[in-house]
Amino acid sequence: MSLGSREALGAGSPPSLNVGHLFPTIVLADGRLRIPTELPPDPLCRPVRLEDLELDDELAESGATIEYTLASLRRMAALLVQSGSATQERDEPYVTHPACPYPLLRCTLPNLPAPQPTHTLDIHFLDTHEVYRTHVHGLVWALQSPRLPQLSKRWSSSSAGVAGEQTALLPVVTLELPHRPAWPLLHRYLYDGSPAQLLNNLLTTPTPLPPPTSSATPGGQALSAAQQRDLDSLLIRLMRVREVWLDAAALELSDVALWATLRRAWDVLVADLGELAADIPGSKIPGRNEEAV
Image (cartoon, helix red, strand yellow):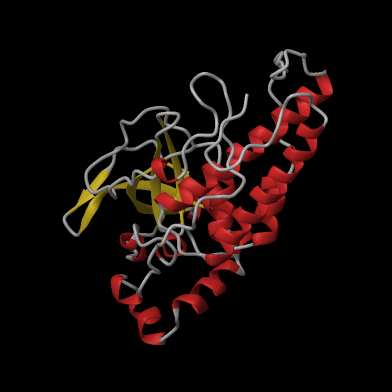
């Protein structure tokens, strides 16, 4: 749910991480492109450590590893995503409690055979200045991002409401991330951990494409409608890979499969761009840090 402003950001939010310098923009201010043939080196992010998390007693005493616990949660990915989407916030003021450092939001929980969301995230996207609210299963996030260990601590507050509906007070945690358009892809990957699904989403032609623009080659020849459409499609997908890369870097994810999937997607798209450029007079695929019109 989009809140449309930054008003929901409050005290206790994790610090933002300035990662833009790690992967500069591929579209320059004057409209020229700068497309590296390879992605930057993977960020060196430290893995999450169990000792940094406040786990429920039952889970802590089980001796389960991070990998085992995360794999168990990912087997329920579809149900977890569904339960988060179906959770509805109530039109009530925030609640405070001395035992919780975050404002508490009363929500109605869905009647689904899956663990219920434990936290509400208000994500401030720096590119759109939008605050996006999502109800999440905190442990899924805490096990993957060292920026969010507080999401491992569950606030137990469920209660029965009217007609037997279940409500809960969910802590509202705020977070800053660089890019909004990439968020659905990374959000889904955090839950299901599927490199194949992520790769497919990154390579699929976006719909709808923006209205075609008239472009010319360096030699002054106008592109055909088909060439312009193909070029726009490839540029959007390249930008999406970059945006997922930067959001993942901001979360300090150490997932090796994630970074490998982003590299593979980039390689495929750059190769496709090279084939397209071969049919456009005067164009070429630049090397790292070179610029192309």
